[in-house]
Image 1 (cartoon, rainbow, N blue to C red):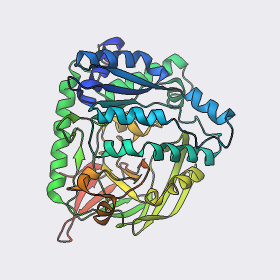
Image 2: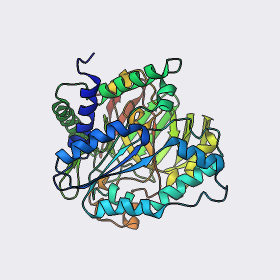
Image 3: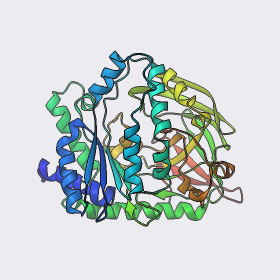
Length: 412
């Protein structure tokens, strides 16, 4: 157990978000998106940002209660309404050379009793309206990062039966540990971690596998890789050279699969929290890159709505490899939060591919990117498929198959 006080760990966390997460540079404005529950953390983030030389920090607040109120009481024909000022704020910060930090936390069951048609509609409207900003973000035009923090509804989901105060305290403790904020020098700890991930990334880039083969209970999948694909891990750089870490925590090495060369069946190993609803124990069957069949023990309608968002939503945009021994996996917890659960297990993502995962991709238009195998979509949703029973093989350019992961762990 760390000897640091809660206040010290919280301050470490805020400083990590600024120094290692967004990598804020002197003179950069910062936009923070956060739930109202995170006000104490956001105050420390703001303080750290000004100490780092930011001339202006602005905050866009969100609240689960307000989201739920809309679904409960707003006119049923009003869900295509969207605040244009919100999109303008995102574009303004990107175009002025600023950075964006998101504190994402929500109750996984928030919208479980709401009309799935309306949930899907609000997701699609949001993705459509913010597409100009997301294009900049996914092309590395700006430095950005995502972190999270406990809120009561989320903590209660993870630690049911505990008193509310204990739920929040336990979740904070876990977050501090897996984000390395409990260490005396968290920045040094992150620098060492990033270096380790970079070694793994470099080995995969040197291999240039033509395909990956997945084998596990309920999974038999072959996933083709584009020519000149690029693996990424941990820290990235903007087009202007600013280093940043998109996700804290992060344990993954990721790239873009070929959108037309995915065949077989894959089974989820963790629930997916999407749009305030849970999708659990689901399978996806692929033919020539597209999902042709889906089953789910829970949330099947929500999953189908996701796949119907647009043409690219039923194809893959990301492949990520995570060892089963990752700190998040070893916590033994199911977080019901993609930021954490995706770093506990190897995963895939439905929807939009990152342009920077293909050599020259950031300079390609949509048609050219699609021609080399990159997927275009309004959405990008990660789902977990890894476990201690997962084996993954890499297929070399000569057609030779070699072990990449066994029992959920890297083969060196």
